Amino acid sequence: MRQTLIEIFGIPIHSFGFMIMLGFVLGIHVATRRARTIGIEEQHIYDLALAAMICGILGARTWYVCQYYERLDGWMDIFKIWEGGLVFHGGFFGGALGAIILMKRRHLPVLKTADALTPSLPIGLAFGRLGCYFNGCCWGGVCSVDFPLAVRYDPGTLPYMAHVERGSIASSALQSPPVHPSQIYASVLGLVLFLLLTWLYKRRRQHGEIFASFFVLYGIYRFTLEMFRDDTPQYEGLSLQLTSGQWTSLLFIGLGFVGWCILRRLGMVREERWREALGDSS
Image 1 (cartoon, rainbow, N blue to C red):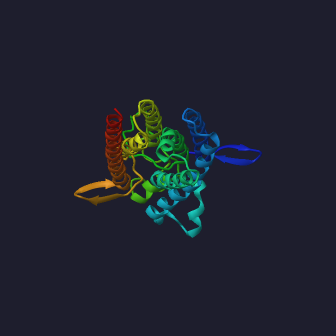
Image 2 (tube, one colour; image 1 turned 135 degrees about the horizontal axis):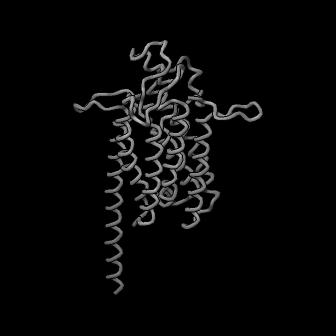
Image 3 (cartoon, one colour; image 1 turned 45 degrees about the vertical axis):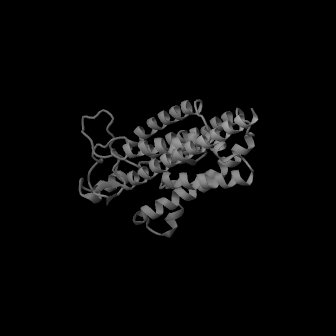
């Protein structure tokens, strides 16, 4: 698999960074169009996207370094994000924190604005996973040779070297064993998640519902995808042998349900107060 997508005047354009950039641009475009419908200026969206991108990269790289520090050859490798090594969970928390801080500074309605931005997240996720496919990271588990979507990786790629280290292939092998294209699964399901959140956005009842829904839906999405991936370590807890991504997915699902319960309770309280006010005025 090639890391370089094209070369322009001798300058290599890496597929991983290009796909992330493409998803970022398309996500902003969708978010600005939606923001117009709720009275949020486009400039705010651009600024929020920039803050989320910077803080998201810091969070994603920090999460990766903490989780996969053994893959680094030296401390300088910490900064080589163009070679991959960004974990979405860390990127989401970092980006969300940066965006929320800016929302508060701009006196924007946090939940309302977050709902407008949230459906764009799976767009970046979908294109980012395509970048992972070209880059060779986030690879899938071994599958049947006859599986029509099976992928084999060349020497020097991360999946190939991982199989050599495990002893499943010799260092002289021409290619890795056939594996699931888990990145393609993730990309397709990311687009499905975008369509589902867009559908829910048009039917929301109160602010914050879409943001909370993303936690639950993404948790289910990632937990399922981890069954096809082969690049994440497993940790045992509560008599369960799950990958780090699956444990984090359970955290996402739990936070989403807690958020839903809080929003539902706040909505009921506001409705009761509204009815009481109407009763007093009559």
